[in-house]
Image (cartoon, rainbow, N blue to C red):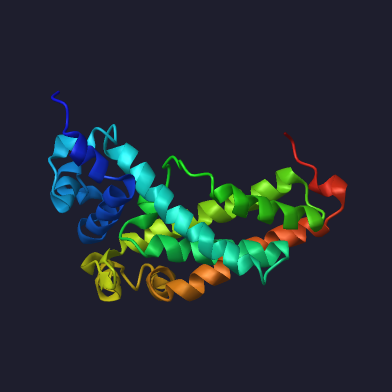
Length: 231
C-alpha cells in the first residue's frame, strides 16, 4: 500500500471521522454504514481511513465510545442531585436509552462494541459507591447494574427495529398491519396486546426499569441466608 500523504493524515483526526460516521449512521442505519461512504463525506480516499482504523468494527467501536462518553457527561451531571442507588440506576437507564435514541440503530451499534475511553468508569464508580452505602455487596451491585444495562440495550434495539428512521415507523410494525395478521377469534388476548408491544415506549420503558429496581430493592430486604447465591 502506498503511503498516505502526511498532510492528509494530520488533518484527518479521530473526531472528524467519528462525527462523519455518526452523521451517516443517522442517514443510512448501521447496515448502510461503510468506510467508503465516510471517506467520501470527509473528502478523502477510502484507503486513507485504514491508517487510523483497522476495519469497520474498529471505527464502530470509536463511534460507540463517543456516544457513551457524551452519555456519561450527562449522567454525572444528574448524579449531583441523585445520590441513592435506586435514583442513580433509574437515571442510568433513562439517560442511556436517550443517548442511544439520538442515533439510528444506536443500540445495535453500542451492543458488543469495545469502548476505548475510560470515562464510563467514573459513572460506574459513583453508582457502586451508592450501592455500597445502601449495604449491597459489589457482586449484587454489579448484578443490578448489568441487568439494567442489558434491559436498556435490548429494549432499545427492539424499539429502534420498529422505525426505519427517527419518527418513521416500519409499516410492518403498524398496529393495523399486526391486527390484520392476528386472528382475533383464535388469539384474542394476543391481538389486544398490540398497543402494549408497539406503543407508549417511554411509559413502558420507565415502568419496566422501575420493576427491575423494585425487584433488587425487595431482594435486599430478604435475610442474608435467603439472598445467598451459588457462585
